Amino acid sequence: MKPTGNNILKLYQKIKQQRPIIHCITNAVTVNDCANILLAAGASPTMAHHPLEVEEITAGTQALICNFGAIADYEAMEKAGKVADSLGHAIVIDPVGVSGSSYRRERCQALIEEIHPTCIRGNYSEIRALMEHCSTVTGVDSGDKSLNIEGMKQYAKECHVILIASGEKDIITDGTETYFCENGDAKMAQITGSGCMSSVMLGAFLGVEQSVQSAAACCAFVGIAGEIAAEKTDACGGGTMTFRNQFIDEISLMTPERMDRCKIRL
Image (cartoon, rainbow, N blue to C red; front, side, top):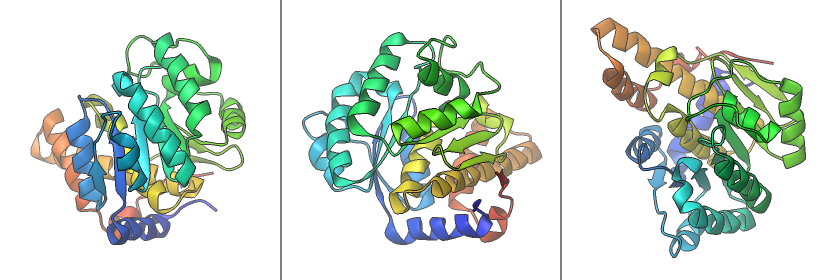
């Protein structure tokens, strides 16, 4: 059954009530925004990344985010991931840059096999690079506009993972159920970190419910915030930095009525 605005509301209320601690090993470019968007949603971030502390830290959390923009922290991801996996915590891998770096792609695939993530979320080019074991673009932005849906389903089944490809429409599948989320706005691609923020938000949603429906609900939730932020930015004549602040604001100001803008289809 596809998630509705009411499903999103229930998950959002769980986050507010349970205040899950989300361990984020993410890149320095977006660490502040990732922490702030989790706080805006009612979750509690910890950004610990030293390899000598991450095992202890992640044991007391509900979810772990491993962002490959922080490839230098691979040892920390590996150590934290093994603990999170052993405890049954939600694990999200964001394969930042694997579309243009064979080293990142190899390390990402190795980590997937070692720590058994709950979810992998990347842009279309990053997901295609993982599925096809090849470079697809230079840099971290997506050059792909479409994806092989059957290939995504097969990859998700083989890796026992929720696979999310973010783009003009988000594609979410666990290999059995597949959802398409059409919420969002083009301005989200004009700021640094919208993908990283989406991945840590997945940690919050999956930290309270590990399911493909929860992942799809998160995509809609973040997309709705992006839509409203874009409308408010346009209304005041603002630019990309105005949008960035409005985007995080809208996460904290989300209402049941706004969640009815959910556009998830099968």
